[in-house]
Length: 366
Image 1 (cartoon, rainbow, N blue to C red):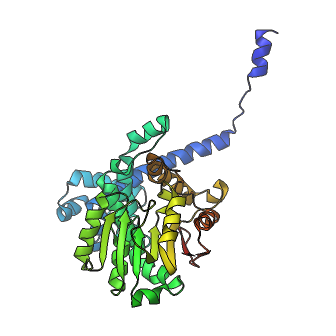
Image 2 (image 1 turned 90 degrees about the horizontal axis):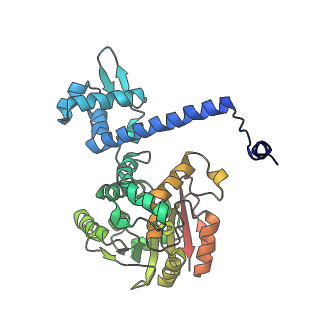
């Protein structure tokens, strides 16, 4: 067999659809420019620029510099970039830039349901582990929580305030069976993976007759959580401690909560067994998880992209760093939550009837 014949048989010509290739090149460039837009938004969020424009109105770069005491040349470039992106409006007659009122809930409103400020803030910290993440791709393992910059934890705390202020008391607790009344009367509550404690502080402010304890495996969050409770005036009924709750809980409780924690856990099955064992008769488990579908096709689009991106940069890798299963941010669709809860001994699991495309909230009973 000749070399020429072999080459002809083993070489396959790739026929490109030029229209599709051109469309994808444009799409990829658009996504790249969106990354720059996000980076500019991160700067605007951290520097308080969106809040200034929302509160004080349109400004030239010089006027904004005077109002914020920031460098005019940098502000001129920042304003121009976001005007080109359509995030800000520009009046060429006055050279003023304005934040459209319809954009303010996303960019300038703190702890609103549409606010992306906390996400921008977290992103700063997530990108800081880029080099360790490259190493994990090459060698396996993961990036530990201790590797993340303080900006990530600050952003995560801001993010938790969104559901604490808008959803926890208004929708989730009322949707549970009999829990709101019991909280008023006074019960023992634990939050596993409590972070800086905002969920328990919110509950303690609303239900002063109940007592609350938060546990987190990442010890540096505990001091901040206790300080937050002190500042909120609820330290008499809220306390926080460093603990790996997947091993054992020191007490039993009437209500146990996990907020975006189960999918991060090194051993979700063990954690659920501990939670089940730690519930008193008649108790309840409240579980918040990202809404996740079963297949990539169902998740295709911005929501799925966000989930898998967050998984790579935090949720999956921090679990793997502990030698864990690394479920990932999209790793707990409802069927999997049900399977794990049944395996841990729970007799019933109910997804709360909430109209929320981003979050799934479950109530389980022992």
